[in-house]
Length: 278
Image (cartoon, rainbow, N blue to C red):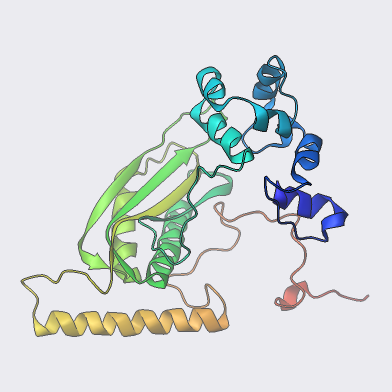
């Protein structure tokens, strides 16, 4: 509600702190139509109207137990949140994620093995960057593909596979190899895919990872070389821009890349997009 008020009501000047006990709370919620409340769709609006609930304020005054019985736990939580009772804990921004995923819907459907494999490789590299960014190691790599469920006239196939890593790692090369193995196990040529993704799972803190009993001085030296290589890779990409240094190069205009047809020209960062005078 505060975010909506800050954006749409000039009186707040772009910043709004809204408390349930403030004088502005009730008038503001009375102005908000029920359909503008997050998670309340058209069908819910129609059903709630039969109960006399027409605005965010009406929902805030409703009985949460009754809302739960007639609708869902999710709507009950929305009702409680509007009353000022928090139901969703705020995440600590410094808390490490338990899973890391990179996925994307393609700009167009494709059955090209090469194009989809490129997408998986790019997603695996991006996931590895995120993994190193939070000082974690992954024990397994999960890969999935999806066809277009909005095209029932086409064959449907949404496979997935998990490949366990020999030891916890944040090395892009190891993650790329596992992602490629998972892709090879699930790809079928006669399906046109619309989405793909890579998820790193079973994460552990890099500073607390358990070493193998079979470790040798050579394996320790190899890990140190890997750490230096990945640190150099990340430093170059942070300085020169993401994707400056990668393992393998993506083909231009690949199906998995976003079309970005309505994107504003990148005048400050791309020579080929500078405005021209004729």
